[in-house]
Image (cartoon, rainbow, N blue to C red; front, side, top):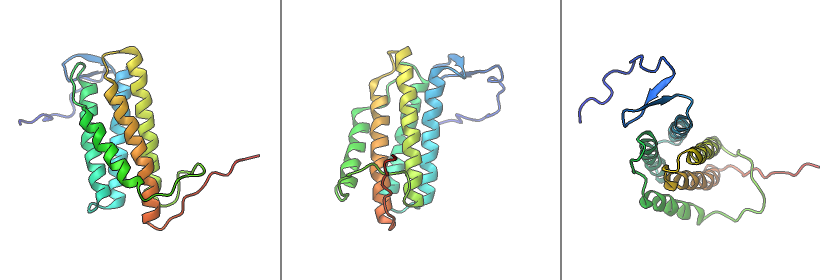
Length: 183
């Protein structure tokens, strides 16, 4: 593979537009760019979470897999009509969700995004995943060629991060903080 990004500062976006993978240009405030940006931010939050965890366990392997998957998601969004996200992406997330959820007690109340540093970073990543999902839903309202698999992947990703946050909290000796209803 050649140098794909040999020059970073091109000045081509100075007019408020950006190039897509198919060579077309759109405004930087287009719904497609919001979705791409939110997916990129989600991926970045996973990087922070990975740095918090270290890189020698099953949780890191899951997060690495998700980061690679998110590049597929972003690639599909950046090249209209290109398909990269498959049923295998969804199945992989579901396997990890089931594995992590096996040892967790059922929830009887909502929990606050707290507990331990790693669990809290995981909850931030989950919230950013939900924003990315909302951006993709908004884009799908404008462009029905955006495949539902992208939205489904982001939904599954936020689910697995919620479960992972609970698991990390327990692993690291923290306590889940239950929501206390206000009067």
